[in-house]
Length: 250
Image (cartoon, rainbow, N blue to C red; front, side, top):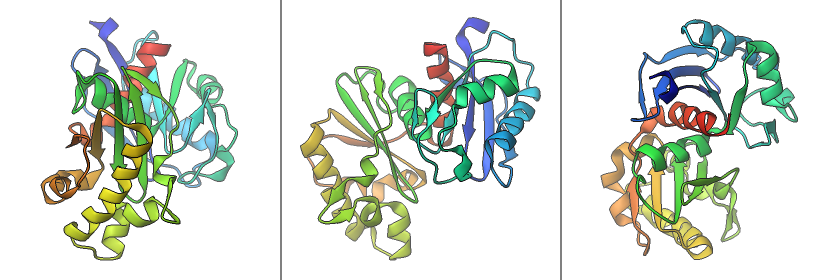
């Protein structure tokens, strides 16, 4: 059974969460545990908190560990950081965590992890070709997966559309700040997804983020050719995706 398990850690601005994942099903085999993100959230402090979290589980030494970050991660190096301490920029996450945890880890952007999980276990399971997963929250996160292969570190929320950074017009946070009706917001989303559709011609859009629980209020109003569906994994997706990627690449 152990061969089908991996551990995922999802690092956010307010909390660091982890669980053991059954990679056959994409479901947790343990309770998800959460520790508040340390303040300041320096690399050393976050690594120590990850060690604390792992010590709450009886993990075999051989179990792969995947860690998500709220930032682009290229070859295990954090390119820039918005939601944790700025001292993360340029840090090699794999080296840092290996030194602190005594284990190898796989580091991945949080939106990429969530998107990968939706392809393996969620709304995009069994879909061939190009799947684009977006998370509508304070900003717009994105993940692109082509025939099951993650194309990492896309920042499609920052496309310039009509002279604006897309997420400053179409994110869920903007909808709330401007008190937009779902109908008015859907017009902005149509402009956004229509532009992404023109650039990439995807086979499927998957829409995540907390607001996707209300998908029936706005998804049917988005007028594009590509099929667009709500995400299925919600707040488990980051942990599940990180665990699956760790198993694949470690």
